[in-house]
Image 1: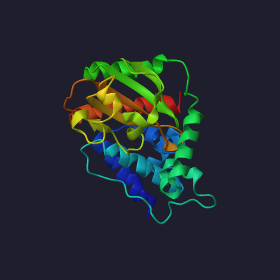
Image 2: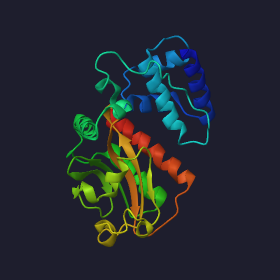
Image 3: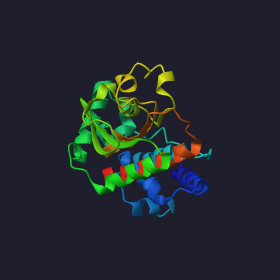
Image 4: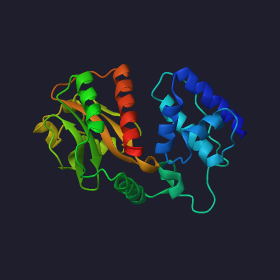
Length: 257
């Protein structure tokens, strides 16, 4: 594929969706990309050539951002040249997850979580400001930024009565980190996956949950940003855009503190 096609489609799509270069770079970096914002800008202006892997990571990043908008344009992937030579796995990050077994994927995810050095760290204002915004916008009882290891849910930031270090297998967030996109539960008692969950039938009596996966190094999902309430409620397209915009800001803090 001619790289010029990807450049033109990326530029067009970002303009239509009113997305910034910074939006694109944050998502690209989260997928494991290694070039700077200046180099991305030079590439989009046709001043710099990139290898197929980097071009495809930028295309994937753009497409993931576009999925959160009403814009239908998508950037094509260069299928003939998207695999690097030599060891093709780890350099691809989460973009090459299909090349791993389920156990290997989880191992890479946990390694990415470890690289953030956030597990069991103290509360920080740079994360608390986003849980505060989420709680105020959605008018819910709780909002959290959670990190998930192989055993538990660590709350990096929490507003509300959510217990620290819950076993990860019973948490809604454990499902969210396996999702490609947000997990929205308007009424947990009407959802077959969660209506028997101990966090629904007992404290904190969750009825409404909306969570976005948070990507860390290499694009691996290391946690979630979510809002929780004891009453069922609707969730609009605008709500989804707001939650995802906050999630991208949290990801920026995780990736480049």
